[in-house]
Image (cartoon, rainbow, N blue to C red):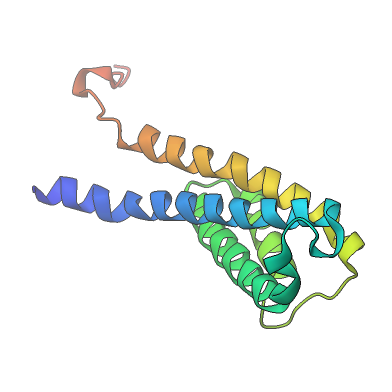
Length: 144
């Protein structure tokens, strides 16, 4: 592998990692969103007994995914989206948890699920758009 290709893989590999982590966070959030409608674990009996561990893992994955996504969006100079990622990471942080009742968490879970599903392909698309080779003849000549 040439050094240019290797540096591109090192630089843009984080975009694909962030996108995969965002999709995994969306998967976990989808199970939580479905759990609200299937109250008390009638549909998902396993979640009833392991709720604490599941919600801790959910907080950890969502927080890590959005921290990594915020860093990547910041590198692409998309500061409002990076700020939104920091706010989502703060909301789901496992170290100093934000505590609310389950019904109050529901809109945050749904919106974070939606934003995670949107942010993952956007990161991949931004990664590919910055990888495209620039043709040397496409640069305009300076005025004389």
